[in-house]
Image 1 (cartoon, helix red, strand yellow):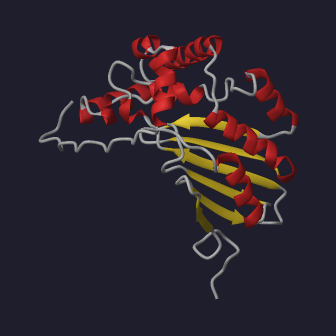
Image 2 (cartoon, one colour):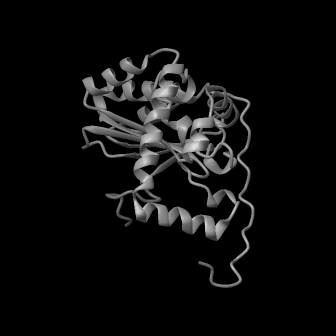
Length: 239
């Protein structure tokens, strides 16, 4: 008999919503918490040289205000129940992860859905996040290991998107406008190809119902992320 104590093909349930979202559920009813993780097909592959860091900048702003909640309200609600929620971006996708007690699952799903579906990109928060990113880039500039990694990528991939920093550079982050952020969000964020994973103390039917309630009616004019172009292997050692 297969061991279903741990996550595996026999214990993880897969569903697909009508709008294309894939839902993966692993129920562990003995747990007092619920963990929600997922991704959308919006990554730094399309940032471009002049706007490197755009996808990451956009993800950093998702929790900085929505149509229903201010930045302060979002963090007050999270902290009031001891929950956590984070958004970030990679080269091919942007992702999110959050955890809360089972009794606060509705709040967690509401915060995730609000941040993904209705971010408002307040101007003051755009500038505040820009300042935080610039500070991080200044710290990075003094980290020899990190700078060596950036130099290695640039040497290996040259002007290919894999050669760019996902966090951007001071001059590119400074050049990104609020309109750029809104345009990137409107173009690439949506349910097509999205994955939502729910793990913990919700049974399968309840977990699926909460995902359906949060995202089932989400429909957008979503552009498809392009495939990465092939990269030529180095013909000789380079320094």
